Image (cartoon, rainbow, N blue to C red; front, side, top):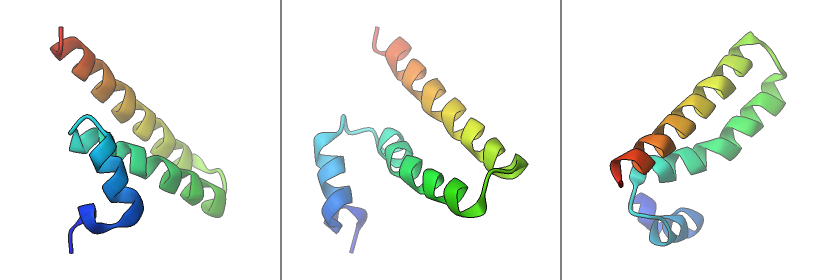
Length: 68
């Protein structure tokens, strides 16, 4: 069984721009929200959120610049 076989994940991979990093970041976002909600806001969860945002924005900007 691969990730493509899962109902929600397979649809996301099919609809996406064939960029596994972007797909992984999209899937990690809601999971990160759940982690922050369950673990309560702390330095560690804030650090995770900032790290996620930096990774998402830098990957998006990198893809934008490389496609020009």
